[in-house]
Image 1: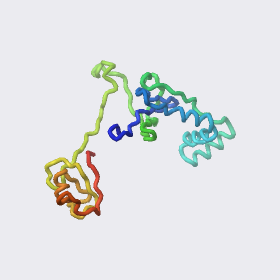
Image 2: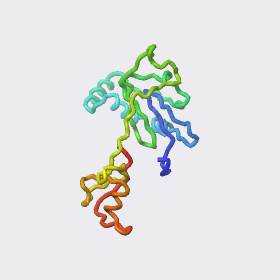
Image 3: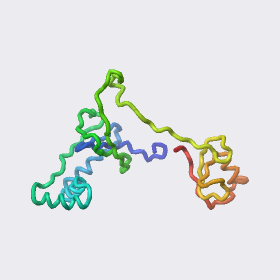
Image 4: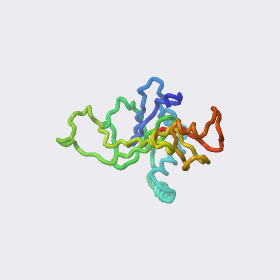
Length: 198
C-alpha cells in the first residue's frame, strides 16, 4: 500500500467503550471523531443500532425492546477516545471471548477476540519488554511455475486456453515464452494477474 500511495497510517481498536486511536504518524486521522459526531447528532439511530447489537437477532431485538419499553431504557455506552501508543493493555477493561474491533485503511475492519489469558509462570519469559509474545504466525506459501516446476511463480492466468490447468501459475520466463512472439501478445482471451504468495 505504501508503494502505490494508498497507505493510510490511521486506525483504531475499539475495546468495550474505548477507542484506542493509532496516532503515531503525524498524518494519522482520529477515526473516532466522526463516530462521536454521529453519536451526538443521530442519537436515536445510534440507540436503535445499539439495541440491535445488544439483542443479537431481530427476534430477540423485538422481545428485548418490548421488555425495555415497559422497564428501563437501554443507554448507549459512554464511549471515550485515547491514544493507542499511550495506553497499556492493563489499562483497558475487556472480557474473554468478547469480540472487539480493529479498523484501519479507512474501512478495513477485523474482529479481535481475546480467548485466553493466564498469569505468568516461572518458566515463561520474565522480561516485560518481550511481551506480547507471538505464539503463531502463518507461513507464506509460494507456488512453483506449473510449466517448468523449477522457478517461483510470478504470474497466474485464468481461463487460459494454452495453459495446463486453470488457474495456471507461471514464472516470468515460461509466461513470456507461451504468450508472446517477437514482443507481441499471441492471444488475449484470458485474465492474467501478478502472483506473490498465498
